[in-house]
Image (tube, rainbow, N blue to C red; front, side, top):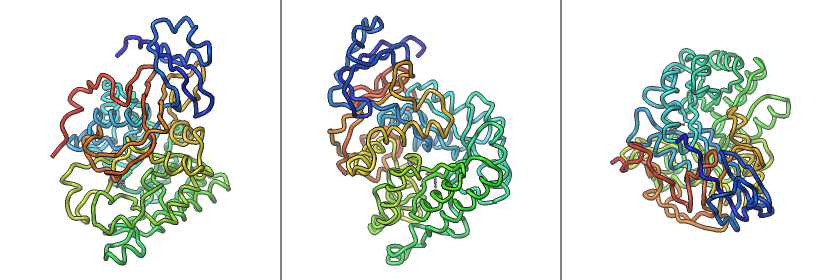
Length: 449
Ligand SMILES: NC(=O)N[C@@H](CC(=O)O)C(=O)O
């Protein structure tokens, strides 16, 4: 995929949902923007796309994706996950290290990075594990991962909390050498032994062991203090409670270098969904209450929460279609994230399209220190772009998603907004809502049993 992409002329596209204009993409960058774009010399032979009524955004960047390769290719591969990402409007995804083997060495992160490059649908940026094997016992070779070709800047034991405060302190100190960040899965393990869902009225009614909000809030508070102490940089994964919003707001107010993410599912779904004991709604951290949903929406709107990250967590059928307490936590997110943000944040007036670009592209790229993504829609910038039809609606069907797994919590639900096209360095990866040249090798196969 080293040949030059055919130039693309987007007719009447609306950058950030504002004034429609023509946009010319050539040689991987935006070369012209405005009424005279079609007259630009580089427009000769361009593929014209009628983008009337479409919103043009910088390509989305997901700071929290599980691609499952290596090790659980029956649930997802770099190929199927890249396809889901491109269809969801993403041009870059950060891949969590809870694979088998764990991405805790330069060798594994380079393998994942190269797989992503070979497939070429999105840039895949591996996240390195903080501790060897994600066991929380000793630090992994963070420096070797940082200086590898994958140039890792984000480190996380996601799925598990770095609960030992001394290890967390050391990790925060260590990543400063290469401007890295520790992305913490904030879950106090002693407060969540055997936890199955949010601790509250619904868990009491159902008789399921609860996962109290304080187990998240206590770790965030501790880590903000540690971050101040060693003058480092902290990112909070999948923040889910009203109290956590308050803790992060207080830390930011006193100058802590902390950023936070919320998932699409925590913007809309609540613990009431557990009443049917359908494990598709089992996730970590768990779905919370209406009050928490309102608080994380408000936190995202006012900037306390910096980004939306999917926590796309594919699971094979046998790991989801079983008893609630046996089921693996996690839900798909890449192909529904933008629609959920449109429904919960844009339609409600909490964010405009510039705000969507900020929380789904610019801020995640900045936190992950990823150059070339999350840039403005402007002349000279890399043509990593997504084109959205904000008026379309669609009904989610897990079986129709590109992911190898089908565990979407939005099955059968009508959502607003469709990704019409995605461009990676000027080359379409998605056109008319379909993958372009869906040759992702062995990666795109039949769904696992
Ligand atoms: N978010 C989830 O519910 N699941 C994650 C890991 C985790 O955070 O437990 C996964 O890898 O499946």
